Length: 219
Image (cartoon, rainbow, N blue to C red; front, side, top):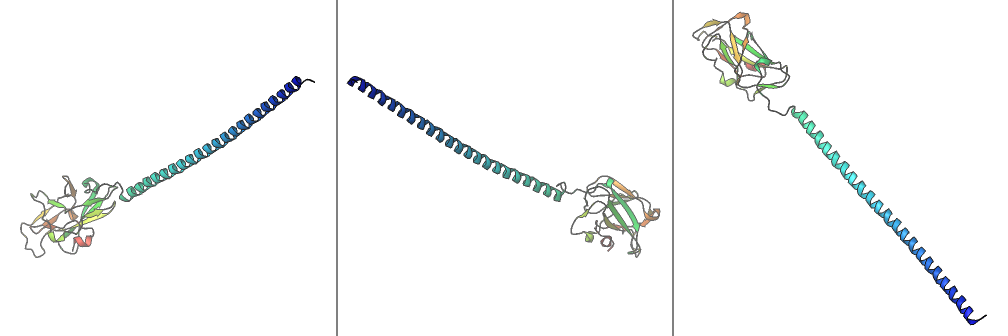
């Protein structure tokens, strides 16, 4: 065997070894890249999932808070009803009656019952017109209550009417058969039947402010 043949075989062997080593290194590098890539991808997915979960929790919390606020508002609205200011009772939705009482003498009890479905007020005092009187019956100022009378549906307010003086000191006495009652701030009147169809009045006739209790109206 010649020296040239030996050298050629040695060179081929060395080249093959280098080629194999290069292939091995390349494969290892690729595997490392893939492993690193998988790890990075998994990390990114975990981070995305964490972020999504955080947003979802935050969103749920925000929605719950908003819902709670709405519920609170509804409850508050339920406490205040419509939330609007209570208005004066509508004369067309109030039933009024006048009845004679035994004590005090020469008195009538005027009762106003709220027939509407909402609470209303009876401010001030009833303006009374007997027959075709030119002026309303004067009010007894001392009877003014501390607060405006408020009527829930079905509830009543009261006013006492002095028809004539007990000692006969009144003047211009006459028998009347018609009574019209005006509520404060309202233009329409309610016609009220008088007990027995008529009543005697004189210049002493007066009316009290609206009261929440009948006893206060006749006190």
